[in-house]
Length: 128
Image 1 (cartoon, rainbow, N blue to C red):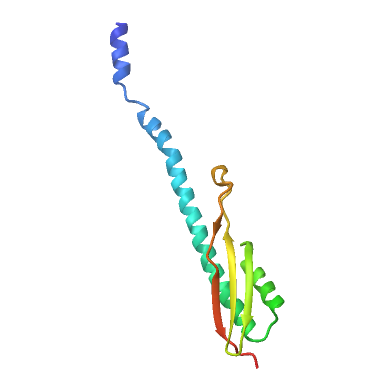
Image 2: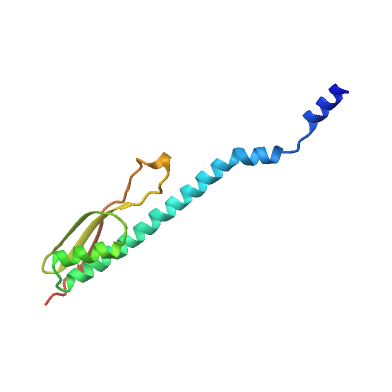
């Protein structure tokens, strides 16, 4: 009788789906967090490019370097500005900035740093 009961328990597959789900859950969570971090990086790139373009446009109409840097910092709104540079000649002005991508606060990624390539934008010098 006991032997028959043990054999029946071994053949019973109740709970196996919960066990498989528990084994796959960390992988699914990791994939979702990876996709979210990728979306944050893409958003940062778009915002940094638009900000560099706006900064170059702002500089081309005669604003000072400190005004342009202040405007760029305000427009980035929480995205860390690592480096800012701008210049002008008779024909054009340029703004170059480097930003760091914000990283999700995950213990595995605590020392992870994503730096984007410097973004450089030129505009015609319209200062009269």
